[in-house]
Image (cartoon, rainbow, N blue to C red):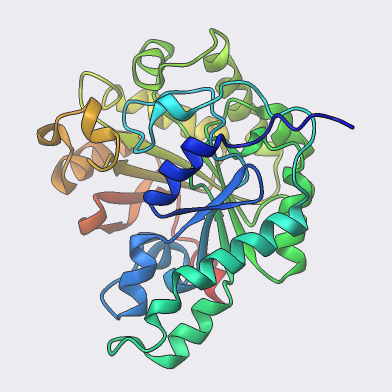
Length: 321
């Protein structure tokens, strides 16, 4: 019988649950997004709904690798002290079980909205049956060895998938079949120097791994997004032309340029005052597209985010169909 080392320790599990995470099985988790609550009450929605058509109230924000990550990004709202930097090896939970657990936990988390005066019964019923999985909550999901099977199982349930990766595990991206509905690669910095300062990698070769992922992306036949989470000029809000060059080399469809949010453990590492507001993000976005064929095709001011692409594709928002 193999020893299961892929378990969240009990004390950490208790801490996570106090932060409104719900642990699915031994190593996975789900948490209700603030935008899901807003959307249920008719008080706004996530920028991903505006950009891509994803219904915020039907989104399952989840991860199969809650405490496994090889980076300690300064802007991350999770605690770097949680993370196990090694790949998940040995026994892991099966995808079907994980997803059943995630959906059950999500249903319990939204139960209080059932008779809420601001929530339409139709919206609650839709939220009860999530339509979209955002595999992005915590940790690095590509560390979960059954990720291809997890994505397949979501698709078997007629759910769309967003996979968010830090780009340091191209070996797993090569194994994905099917690919996620939309693949996000968080490009933490434009150069190796700024990457080391901002991402604080656990291993010396991780910038090279990110570059491998950039070179791999053109061969992956799915919707692709490069995502920037920007801090300030002392970290990664630098060299816009280098960001543009890497984006163009990746042949991704979209480039999201977003300011970090001063929430969670990010508040312990970075002063609130340096959080870039929308005007600064817009200004930096304009520098990225300067002297290129790129253009800003959308933006959401309250999320301090812009969307850049070569063109505004007519299929961009069809994920809600």
